[in-house]
Length: 153
Image 1 (tube, helix red, strand yellow):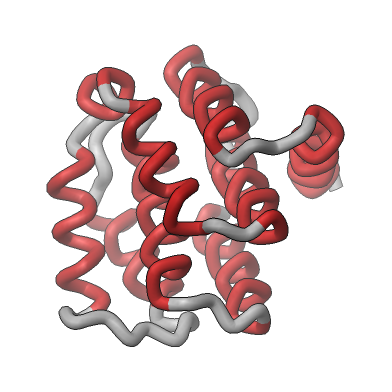
Image 2 (tube, helix red, strand yellow; image 1 turned 135 degrees about the vertical axis):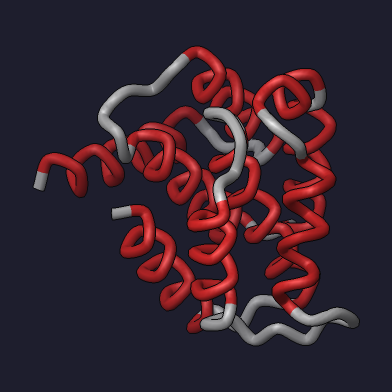
């Protein structure tokens, strides 16, 4: 399920011709969404690597190395929650685009909703993302409704 969510997102994002910095921001948001419910498993790292290859990666290091570095720096749930405002603010700075902010919030929301339950830690991440991405309540609700309709549909 998560693989389809991420792959579909990255295929849309590719069409928007993201900059390298924006691509890094999206990958970091994806890592945070997966880390907030506990540890990131090898399967999730493989998923991120596979999906990220759909993007136009132009980084100084290979995409797999960047993903591994990001996973290592993010840590698990406790570290994410202790640093959530700083982490989401850094991602927001990299995204720096209203459309991409909303799409990234949608991706994070869709991933935390994938199991049908949004836990307290996931809610804290969503609140921080909505604030740091400077989403209006209308934008936030539209992203959330889109994600919910895809889960229900």
